[in-house]
Image 1 (cartoon, one colour):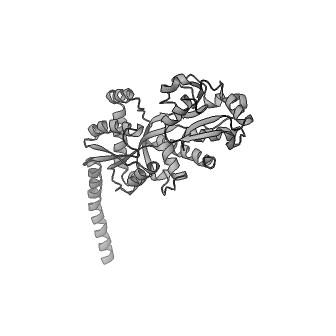
Image 2 (cartoon, one colour):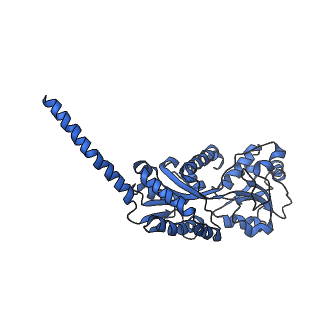
Image 3 (cartoon, one colour):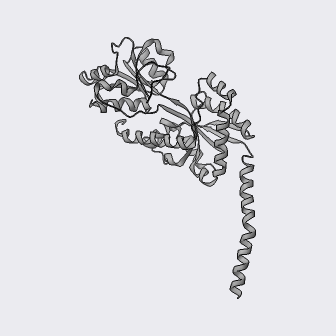
Length: 331
């Protein structure tokens, strides 16, 4: 009888406590955020991700009702910023802003990072680039198939510029592998910035460049564009897609996304506080729907699309798997 009484008492206490727990959880969700949020950029000031973050932070501050403060933590190919995010408390007050592809891939595959792509939850990728494949206007080449034939049959005669570890760098290697060309046949010059790689092809130091299409308008007069690394043609450059350009050679290559810029948090934060994660995502979707923000982004040539967490996480994993599959030819 005593056991029955104790059991009944325990159930009664649980019943009284449950509404309090639900109320506390709801209060936690409704009170978030109640202090400033730090938006951590994995690069120095003035770069693409930094400019995107500073514009977005102003609008997110208004939407969330708290300051969103931008801090720059450059270094080690974004590893410093990534580790800072993962070591911060998982409470939703630290946003990671970066060019996740290709930099996060490279830190994991070549930079000895201790984290994985699954350690982050990607709220939204808002700014995408496609890579342009082009030659110097005086190179004598007029098609991608012609350039690849020259690399195959005349080893060492074609020079190309790419940004070290970029999607363009990987695409150059993949094109050679797909057409059974020894990697050493191409005289590949790697640079640390897109500006340097573009200057090399514009000045005729190299024949070929594989580089972000956005930002290449400034050297258009020095180029013959050959292909765009995309599933579909784009309005900015009137050229075939990479696989259309490869049809005469009867080969096909995976289409790599050039760059994916946006915002992420730790995966542990989303797991522990899904309601806060959803509130952040909704705030980002809301501000990207505003004409005022879109006009501001457009005036700075910054992308502002909403694809959402599910699609962003899918894109990150697919992009990483492609880099992982071909990582051996980047060495």
